[in-house]
Amino acid sequence: MADEKKLDEKGLQLLGAVAAFASGGPPGITVGSVIAAAAFVVEMVDFMSNDTTVPDALRRLKESIEKIAVVIVSIDQRLNELTHELAIESNRQTLARLNTELDNIRLQTNRMQDQPGSIDVAVDVANELGVVLDRFLRADFELWRWVDVVEKNGQPDAEIGRFKNVPTLPVYLLGVMSWLAARQRVVRADQAHRLDDDRPRILRHLVAVSVRPEFDKYRDGDAGRPTTIAENIKWRIRGTPIASNKFAENRSCRFFYEFRNWMNGDLARGDNFDIVTDEDGVLCTVDPFSLGMPNTEIDWEIQAGVEVLHELAEVLRRVEATGSVSRQFIGTFSTGQAFPPGTLYVTAQNGDLHWYRNDQASRPGGSTSWSGPNVIGTGFHGFTTFFNGGGPAMYGIQRDGTLIWLGYEGRHSGLRDAWLDNAQPKQVGTGWDSFKLVFSTGEFVIYGITPDGRLLWFRHHGARVGGGDAGDWSGPNEVGTGWGHFVKVFSPGEGVIYAIDGDGTLFRAVHKGYLVGTVEWEQDVAQQIAVGWNGFFDVAPGPDGVIYGFGRDGRLFHTRFGPPRPDPSSAPLPGSLGSLLNPGPTTVFGAPPAVVWEGPPVEIAHNMPGFISVCAQLDETSGGPIVH
Image (tube, rainbow, N blue to C red; front, side):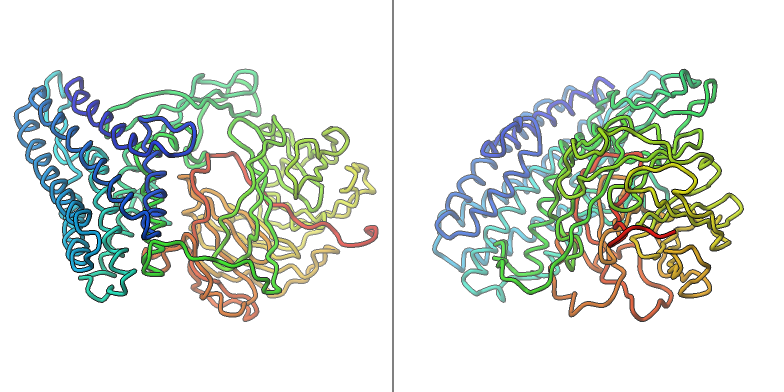
């Protein structure tokens, strides 16, 4: 293992050298962190968007290429330190090919810098660099695969074809930026028709640097098999939860993560968390799929280049849509249509309650504008279920079945001091541990699903103040049966209920009698409207038909199922690859004509740490007291 580390250490130094040329990045970025390269991409795009600063972009690219060339020579000199002949020769051949491509990039960049006014040269450079870049994607990313020396049965052995982010990623990144610089000059001269294989090439590299919506490195089958550069990097960085104590003590199981980067051999432990148990002495186990991604795993992915590839995907997506790297001006002219925000409450692994607000949440194509996370409370990991019942009414179910009420009026502000009654919890019910699932449709209406599949309706008339007397409740009323096979049920309000079964099939039902607890439904049975929803780690509703899907790797997706709107397809899709990557949930069965799917899932956030649960802010009863 030591021999394997020798090559990797230099690779990490190379990564630092690449990051160093982005010294103008945000404060706090270290030289050894590849996140600085993401700042470099943003800076280069800004340079390319202005004719007067294009020379600055070319100069920075040339400086960066020279730095990488020096480090590659150093790597070549150290290859003899490996003890396995196959590793030495194979890696030297790969390194020589990579150095050839770097020389090609250097040559073409110098040509463009030497003749800045020649469009003919810019066309030729863009076409030549496009061919160079395509070689980085061939033969299952052959230029990214290296031979490691590992220990097997006490003897050094060669592991062939291991994907590594460095030293290839920095060379590829500079090649893409040089190609985009030349291409941008051609586009600004209105000569885009002279670019060879232009749109297919853009799409090829867009796919290569992206992560499919359905990709999950921890799953089996196609969804867990890496097919892009970004996915290969993510796939090789893993976090495994391990119990610190075999059996629960003080009604708690303590866990930590063991992290491993299979590209450089790094190993670490951290991100401790506790899970509350019903009693002492139970075996400490946890389902990894219920945890999401820990902070350290996200940080390692960022350092390995996932963030810079995400930034590059945004640039290529813009080039594919508009033809140019320049950001389009989006005016602030009023259209007369307002899109309400969506507020989410997320219980983190350590029990902190986080507030998020997605501004203009129902905007066609999704909104990437976020406020938060704000920590508004602590100690929430003791609840088995936590949800908003409408307005200020927050509910948590303890393991003994006690239903706790907390009042919070900071839905818009996310302030920690917006709790009512000094954040004092109030007991408003017992026996709620008898339900398999509990959820709300807002307006202080709460549903419980029993293990035998009965759907019971309750309404908490004391929801505004936390009243817990018998007269503060209506119900339970049995309003449905056959709900026992669902694994996730949620509601955006007004009696609309979504339910996901174990196969990932999404159903929709509308309870017309939700305000009074009568057995009155829009249709006799729930309508099957989509498949593939078991690919999400968790799901929550948003306003105006929005549904949020949380990926286990920290990505957050937006989709909408609601009344049709005028030409939503004309709106920008900030994180969508459309049908290009064959994204997940799609309509497969008919639904009432008043509601339709509005496009594929769109990525609107990423790098969101794993959490215990998420719930949405729902509406409270409008006007007057509740009559019961």
